[in-house]
Image (cartoon, rainbow, N blue to C red; front, side, top):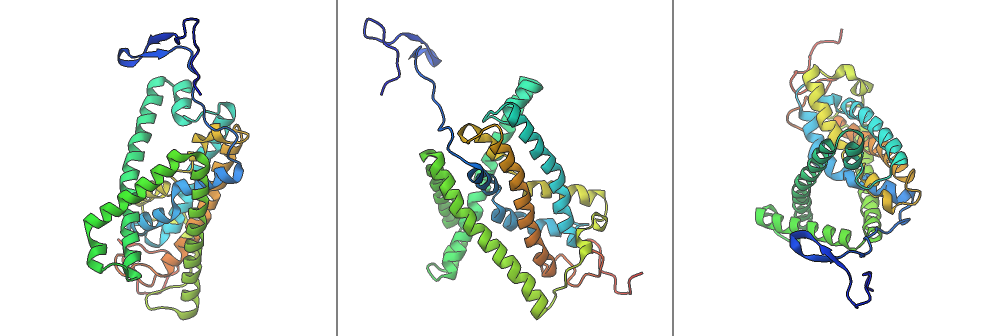
Length: 322
């Protein structure tokens, strides 16, 4: 049904629009579907926007192979968690005061300067573009590997760059279609993916811990509490490099605040969802990092660390601990 305001002459009033095209002056503004997402929906969106499985697949190995970190990877994760948690708390208070789907873009424009908000907005656009390029490639590659494991395609087909690009394009098109279709469809799809994702990651992580504890595979080691100590990180350069990667682990939780206009109790639900998502993400990353330390990569890390953490850049001492 038309929303134009019609004058006595039967024609809607017109005003100059972009590029000189006339537009009706009384046209109703487009609105989002309000009061759609509850706290559980917003939390699911926040967690799934981080893509824990993708983060673990694309970043965890890099984190452990950074010179000076090695087995201190779990420590880097929780150290990076702290500043991001404070940011999430700040987002909660900012959203409570001014719920705006623009989030940091809108808040910086109002509190600091419009130029700062403009710059922040374009940084987010650029980051989103880069993510939409890299993430589907990983999804396409793993999809073809799975199809090869099932015997549907050959190993050469799974390794083909062209096939990976086509598969990546399919995933990107599917996700885009679901987002365009509506927030309810998007959230339901995120529920499904998150259940599968968390079930798989937690199951394989627990299986890895149990396997090390029971079978003691070659090159494995038992869990050490020193892996959680910041003192096990060798040098500030290793710490800074690790925190950069660690912060990326939690990137994306703020999506809940971008959906505040579609959330129930929009002044509180998105902020609460972001904070809850942070702790859920820390849990999944901590559970997964333990078996990765117990069964480290065959190259780049020592295979049997002592009670204190070692790193790829420092060979393991063979003498007794002092």
